[in-house]
Length: 377
Image (cartoon, rainbow, N blue to C red; front, side):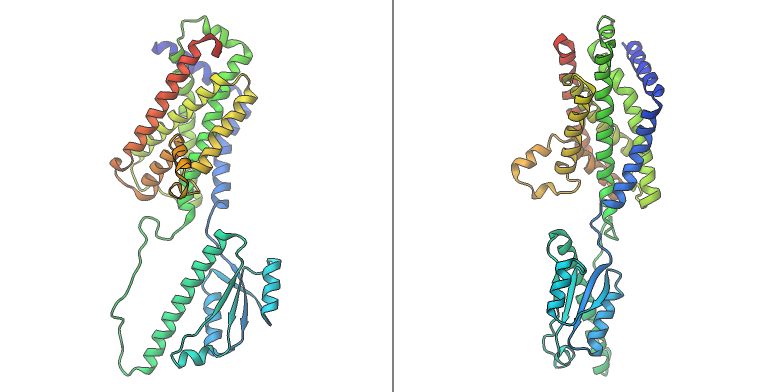
């Protein structure tokens, strides 16, 4: 049995090595996609364009505008004359936010009355608007605390310390860099697309070339054929995964905080699950074109929508959450984030690896049964 599996694997390795263009796509495309999506897929917003309508025009108002401009998140691009101009620039998309500072701001502050500042935010993109709102709130709070502290220091003859000092620390991703959060999801998405397509097309190619008939009359069993087909692509996919982890470190500074052994085991379990998907698809499809299309639909869409890569699964309706349980990427993304970002022990993600092995075992069993039936081939 082992000898026959090795022969099937060697045959597949020869087919892979003879196709130079496929080799280039296999090893270059994943790295290119990781770099491209790594820079493109981010929720961080920098250089928010501001228009300022300063009706107070005092030292306090000018200091507030300067603090926004110096924060690194906002860029003052224009000074506004009135609210009508602010509305026009927001409609044309020339600014993302308009700051309206009413007259009497400084005098209200000195009299210890509520000093109000209005922010008009372009809400067409709800996600971007929410991020801008959080940045605005943080900037206003920081400026308010600093001004109040300076005011007290000038008015009070003695130094007054804050009785309660709140200091927030973010665990794991201290800089709140969304790229660190998205890279594991990108690795999972690219791996499942590449591995499913490669192995599904491989077996269908045997049907189209007629070589599957030779395999049918040989002593090779259905399970031996599946294992022999999976092994070469498992090795190739592991090399691709290693290259993407390396590129994630080189280009985005994403380090592996946990064990590399755990990363290898988790990736191997995930690839067994994705390759078993490709084998199952190959038993359904009759041509490489059909196999390619089914592979894309079965791998890419669930990974983007149902895996927690971009959209939180907890906020989805219950029926959609149930669909996510048959998405291998959901479990692998948890494994990757635990190992790469958190560096947690094996026990925290062992159940995720078990789910992937069960998923792979079910699909391999079903595929073996289908291949044994002549109608499946």
